[in-house]
Length: 248
Ligand SMILES: C[S@@+](CC[C@H](N)C(=O)[O-])C[C@H]1O[C@@H](n2cnc3c(N)ncnc32)[C@H](O)[C@@H]1O
Image (cartoon, rainbow, N blue to C red; front, side, top):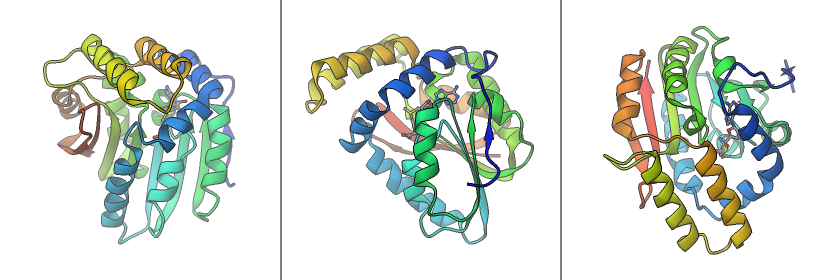
């Protein structure tokens, strides 16, 4: 690995629930990995969308910043066969980042893995990246932090750069409580390969730490804070998850 930077300990002035979220993923990464393998959060469909997206931008060498990269398993697959030149992954979870380094080892591009808060770290870059990806990490930010997130992503992206978010999304007119009830119902009824204890751990994490909003709201915030041309590239059959892109 090149240019490794480790920021420690986890800082307190980034996202408000960073400590809880980081602790959860450090402890429960294997459970999350089970959810990915069983495709309960549509990772397979998201992978196809991202593969197509990266192949469409990859006529030239490009740089990617992944915010909340986890183990980078999705991007390490989506980037195969592209001209990725620089990859930077940011995550709170020391455990997941160690796997991310391993998953990204097949790329001889310039790589950095930063253990830190995504909202703080993204603020350290100026017009540096062609693409920023945030997968299932954006929903951990409360409203004010989402505003800062869009502002800082706009500053960190090159002109014409693209922000891709795949994440939880509320139905039109639905609020956070409505989403949490809907998520818990679907998870309890349909995630049948998990134990009751695993489902209750996940529902508890969502109830305490997730702040999804509608796509309309994401669109407005992005437009108000420097990003244009919002598009929804995918949503799953329950409209729990979507893939969104915005251009700088
Ligand atoms: C649900 S996992 C998603 C991992 C991966 N992006 C994926 O698509 O599977 C959320 C990840 O975001 C990270 N995360 C959440 N809030 C964060 C923050 N404020 N700063 C950095 N990482 C964060 C967690 O540690 C976790 O690895």
